[in-house]
Image (cartoon, rainbow, N blue to C red):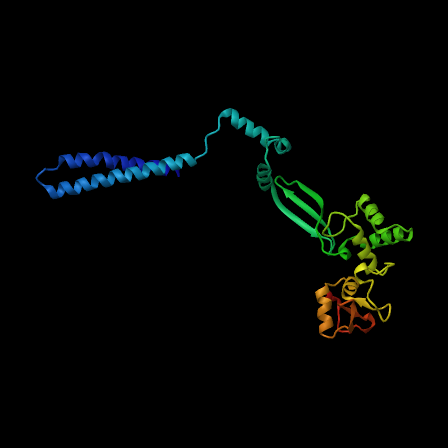
Length: 271
């Protein structure tokens, strides 16, 4: 690109140098030819100026040539990528560029619907590295060790541990819930309630007058199934589940009878 710009500039400079000689050699009485040559001269000057600007721009974009010392430094760093990667002067953007140059292919194998995945990186030169990746999941049931988690929570509860104590115990042991970094007491209570292990109904539904112990609020029933509350409300409106309106003060609350759930309700609908 730089060479082409230089050649165009040289041709334009030649035409600019030739134009005045042509103009000066014409007979002054031949005004038509003189005006034409004068116009050609002005056009040659404009063309030379345009190519000069293009050449300057091409030169400014051309990277500077490295000195022999700089070439030796680059060669040494290329032979020791870890040192280059960990150098204090290497920025995050520099590391991204290094990774793009060195990484040829990435293969990710997800273990079912769980949070665990195996990451295989194929690097330049034939080096292959394997890593374990923990990906975000939406539900507790997707956790690979969900059964062990529930068993451990149940055991801790049987020892009269509070929900907060169970959460602290799990966090200290390195357990991680979906979508959040740590466990908390409300999360533990919801888990126990969904598994039928809660000893008390949630505060927000404890004052509802129930015809039987089987009746559940929409919130309790959705937590029991692991379905969204809007999904459960949709089933209620379409008659797929039976329910009745109760009141706490002036607040109407739906109560659902699980034993009267329509057989048309499926797990697929709840997901």
